[in-house]
Image 1 (cartoon, rainbow, N blue to C red):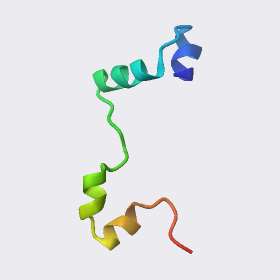
Image 2: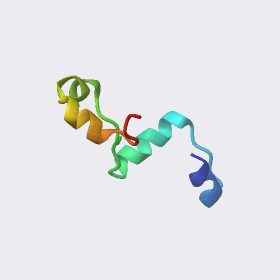
Image 3: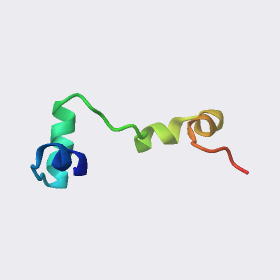
Image 4: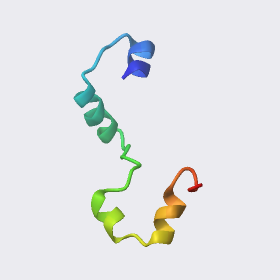
Length: 53
């Protein structure tokens, strides 16, 4: 939202940003809940940004 405003001077509502991004071919990069529930423990560990300590 801020990047679009800085580059173009046009302000968009937060919800409209999601619509624009979807229209431009972007998609969320977080797993949907149904995928988290069926993933194995190893797959869940590989997805994490930092390993557990």
